[in-house]
Image 1: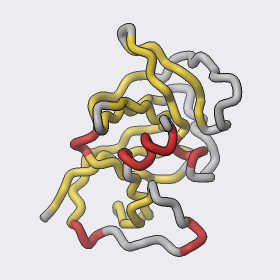
Image 2 (image 1 turned 60 degrees about the horizontal axis):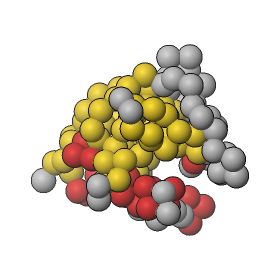
Image 3 (image 1 turned 90 degrees about the vertical axis):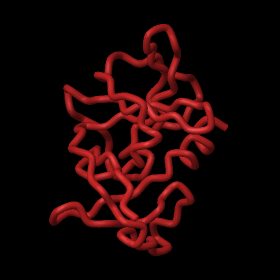
Image 4 (image 1 turned 120 degrees about the vertical axis):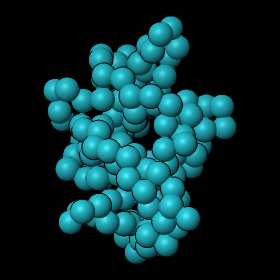
Length: 138
């Protein structure tokens, strides 16, 4: 069975996010920094009167940092909680079958990583947004 994933890029790395948890994509604007938050948490973003925690997706996985001047925030919703993911670019929706993602080796051991797959001639890191939100918003 093929499931649709949104392919995004941050810090030169491709990430796959299950389309069913993506609510919308908004332009990145200025964030309100949260004192004491981990460096990957960029801060809070006001989206139509709702404060949203924004996480730099590439920095969270040690892949650099989102640097594009026209960066976007992908808003994901899981278990009634919203999380913004700062990315440099949004590519497209691509279908992956259940067996398309292979488990990662121990050097990338992270419960928010579902596995690695291929998107064209590049490697894509499949991210479990539910687990990422649990870790970030705990």
